[in-house]
Length: 323
Image (cartoon, rainbow, N blue to C red; front, side, top):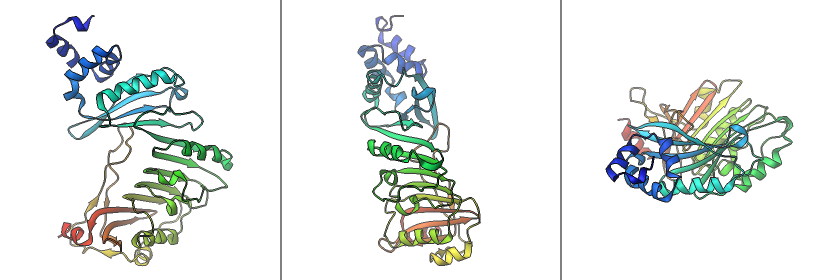
């Protein structure tokens, strides 16, 4: 079918009935087709939130997904398979096609679970990793090199069981990632808790002393660390966290039980497929206040989990919410 030979109204009608996958593949055919798609379909495409190149399948051969929003609900649509990822020319051509449509108005993610495969340097591209490291940590140096080689790391999901712990160096790029999830199955507390400089974190560990959690909150209150922190959850796999002792030690303040508990929740910095687009709500009567700017953070302790959510509000503004 020679689309460009039809009148514009017919062209538009045909494109209107195409799904996203076919539409984007068609736009790769020629510059004229691409221009037609953009001129006639941008109202439809304006709901696009992100483009994800998923390399966790097919031995590193990326799948492409587009994330879009309809009526405040997130959806993912698979667009097409890439040819092998070593063909950088084709990948760059496809990425430039997306840039033509969206520029920097959407997020571009490269998702990988293999730190041994090079990632192309593409404009506006953020890297998201899901890495499982074998026992004894013999590959830790290669993982550190991977982090160092990619300046824009958006999200890391890292799991390991090791005799060695993560690097304690606060300068490590690992601790500068915006969103991080660490699952450490040995008996050591992940040093992420002390060194994290990003915004959102989930930490799973076998052993985490209450004193470690108390130190974390006290350092935040004193303004010594975690200046960018928005949301953090720490889960212990063994003992429950002592509730009253911990709240007393961190100097927690409390909203009257008769008042409503505000629910702290934020958009996730990285959303996978149909997963929840927001962080888990933190609904608590307990809170702490940072000394330097009077900023409030809700604190919730439930059995083996501590949740910590920082509000963009002073204590006075926070308390007005619960009146």
